[in-house]
Length: 261
Image 1 (cartoon, helix red, strand yellow):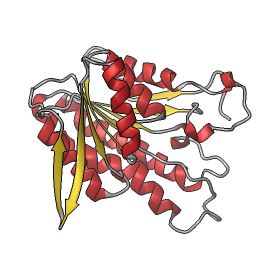
Image 2: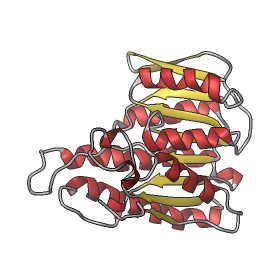
Image 3: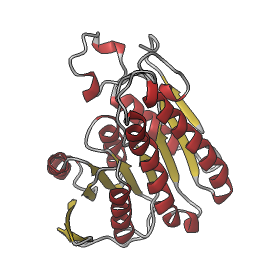
């Protein structure tokens, strides 16, 4: 089942138009995934849907969400998909997405902060404003959405938060510049959150994937096997989620078999 949230802004108000009834059930088989229509986010959404989760997802492009919904009807008829168009680099839209989730569910079982962008350049020569853009998308979106959704986890003493970091979170490399800075910061956020949430029985995992095939690698003249598949990362995330309550993977570092590019 697919349910679409269309947002209409008028004089500062946000109106939601829903096809179908909003779910208010209390269940931990609910997952929120940002940037879910492509790449890693899409692969992760699919593996959670395969395992019986209802999903609440967002992306910037409404046409991509529409296409995802059409595919969901055929592939995952037992998974309810709520879709919301949002630019996660804008705090106002992050909070609108969070508000939609709170209206839809009383409990969130999994939060996957996947939305992010890559802009090449070095600290000394990248365009003015690059750092701000990357921090807003790669760090602030995760920070604000997590804070907004913790009230749907903490009272239940349950939940798992995944922050999609990168090998760039631990390794500076040429032309990485502000991208690496933003990913270092996201890993720092994950570490702080992990310490705060451990006594609340909420797991926090930082995922640090190396080069993985996605739209950003289109046209690259590399052997297909040189990069990882998005499904590899999704399977690893699912494995982390599927551990017993007594165990948590704090940092998941995944690299291509032949090493970083």
